[in-house]
Structure formats: structure tokens, C-alpha cells
Image 1: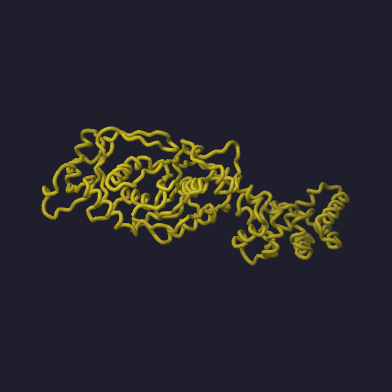
Image 2 (image 1 turned 90 degrees about the horizontal axis):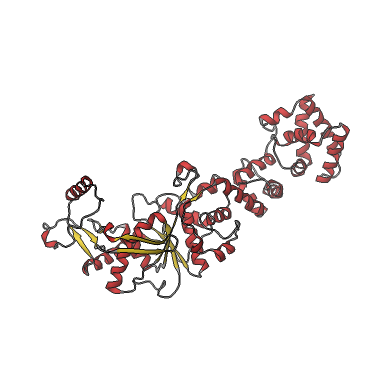
Length: 477
């Protein structure tokens, strides 16, 4: 069942292999992105494998959430997803081949014996690892029908060096490894075996993953080498272990740092996919001083040589700054469709789209866009913020009455005409324009912050704008 792609054909094949026990973590999203970019940059394939062998924790909802998050980021895969849980018989087949050819063995050690072994190692302050007690024993020495596990024979002497594309050469003494289990007592395969078999069968040439898996590489290589000796065609992959993402405090990114799932950045924080794509790209990878990348630019520039060895720190402020850039660049109709469901009540999508050029100028996320757009669809009487209410004293209300009568006489409801009229009123009362704009803003929006006051007037339209002003001006009489 050797793969038809991979090193044998010279085509680069990468894979993303999440465990569906929850949402798509931000670290997993970056790993998926780096795999996707590397394959696309080199004209190769990127594949998806769902490692759902933990049937108690793997859920359909989690699988759907991961697929949804990947799709939202625009990460497409070249083949249908492979589900590890469907490949158990293949994993067992390889384990039996290893057993048959002497690269693995049956271990009949009981749990009591293993615990005694560990206790002795702890007492002697030795590393806790299996001592190989069944490595050279004949299975006939075990009691009849005794349960057993299958362990891999790992190298005992010498050392193993991995030429990691990110970490550089990493060497481990083989004596530090032990003969780990590849088939449990119930006959089910372990993660270590399943990963190697799946990567081989999928033709994976480059394993790009978090550096918390670096130790696993030293345990997985003996399977490749044993199967290469048995049947050939089991080429070792190129490894690239990328540093983990840390929070601002330098600790591994976790829930205590805030949102950790891609869905939360989309649904709760209002981040655009292209912004998160760009931010994750630059999180541990660099290309000169360039900060902003289109997808095509990212594919053209990305390679593993520029991935750093040190952990990256996730900075939400930097992400929101970048998100603000993409909001300003985004199509107005698209933005309107994204925020319309977040605005309570009935929303005029055409009006929201017309308003977008002035709404999106200062927004750093979709939530801020929603907040700045809410005045458009508010119903009278407007709810007033505390600061807005403070602006509407008796003097301001009298000014609003004057403003209303002058604007009502305005023939052309345009920004230029409304600004000219308002400036004329300010000059007549010897006031700065702000002295008029502040109570107008409060009356029109219920807030002290909004787009330019003349943009607000035009967006609301003559009838609604005058009605809102009159509601506050009348209250002074």
C-alpha cells in the first residue's frame, strides 16, 4: 500500500493532522497555514488527516469546527480528508509485519511488574522507561493466553541525528529511547505507529508541525527504518518542527490568555480571515521588513528557511492593527453583509453599504463597525450615553432648534450644503464649529463618537435627521 506520491516522484507533500477534540486552535491554524504555504510554494500537495482515534473525545462537532475554521481561512486541501479511525486494520498490518521480521516483540509484563520497575527506577533516581525485559525472551515463556502488548525494538547503541529544517541538527542518544508500545493489549494501534503508517501511505514528504513533537520524531524514525529494511519504499520524511506560540507573558498560549480558537477570533473578536491569515504568516516567519502580504505574495515568498527557532508571542493589538488595514481595504458590500447579522433589529443593507466608507475608516474589528453603525438603525427616542446626555443642556437644545429650522430650509441635502449652512450658524453665534457639532452628534446618534457629522446627516436622510434633532430641541421648550 505504498503511496504513489512523495519523494519517489519528487513531489512535495505536506499534511495537517489535527485531533478533533475541540475547536481549531490558533497554533494548529498556523501549522496548517505553514503546511499549506510550503506545498503551494513548491507546487506540491497539501493533505488533511483527522486523527480521530480517541473515540471518547473526538466528536462530529469538533471535526465540523476544524473544517469550518480551515475553510474560513481559505486553506484548501488537494484530496478528501483521511480519517485515522478508519485505518486501524492497516496500522495492525504494519505492526504484524514488524513483529514477523523481528523489529517488534510481544511483551507480557503485567501492570504490577511495570509499576515495580518504575518504583525501582524512581528510587534509584533513574529515568522512567521500559527496561526491555521481554525484548529477548521467547513468547513461550509467558503463561498460556496471557495478555500482551507489542513493542517496537528501538536502537540501543549510538545516537540519532535529525536534520530539522527549522531547528537544525538535533541529536539524541539512542539509549534515551525505550521500546514503546505500538499495539495495545486490546489489539488497537498507538498514536506513534498510526502517524508513521498514515504519513507513509499518504506520501507525506515533509512533516511540518509544532516543536512539541520533536521528541516524537526520534521515536517514529525507527518504524520507517524497520519497514524500509523489510519491504523498501519507506523513505524518511523531512522534518520541520516550528516553535510554539506563547502569550504576551512568555507562557504557552492558553485559555487564560484569552481567545485561543479560530472561531472566537471570527465570531467574538470580529477578525477578518485575511487578517488572521496574514498575522499567523508573520508569527514566527519573516520576509525582510514586509508586514502585509496578499495570499499570492505569501505563497511566492514562503519557505522554511525563514522560520525562526524561538517561540512567537501572540499580540492581539498587532492583530487588530492589521485587521484595521484589511477592513479599510475590504469591499463595502462584503463588510455590510458581515456586520448586518450582528446589528439588532431590522437592517437596511443598502444603507449600511453606503455608510461603510465612513464607518470603516477607524474600525479595527467588526465589533467596532457594528458599534459605529448602530445609530443608523436606532429607533426614536434614542437611548443616550451618559456623555451624550451631558452635552444636551438648555443652551445646546436652543441651538438645536435653530439648527433644525435652518437645515429644514436646505434645498440640497448634501455634505457640502449642510456644512456650509452649519458653519454659517456657527459664525452667526460666534461659536466654533465643534460647539454645534457636539450637541448635533448627541442628538443624531445618542453618542459622542460617530463618523463626520455631515456624513451622519446625509446617511440618515433629511426626514430622520431632522426628526432626531427636533426630538431634543423640543425638549428645551
